[in-house]
Length: 96
Image (tube, rainbow, N blue to C red; front, side):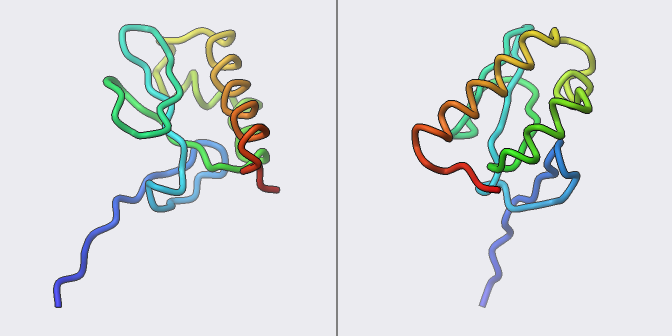
């Protein structure tokens, strides 16, 4: 029986490798950040766990800016994290 490979990605908040479907992707294309819940947006992407603790760690360590190699501003990174947190609160998916 063939074993299917599940794509693994590393969270920028906790640095743990997890299956891609358990993480949220933030994409940067031409200097514009988008929160990519489907994982289909163009551009370079970084991943963060679906828990508040990892998002706070990523924000504190400026991991989004570093992940995009300085191509985004701190304000844009904070806005993306705030958008994720608001979506999680509305959907009730906030963990930890």
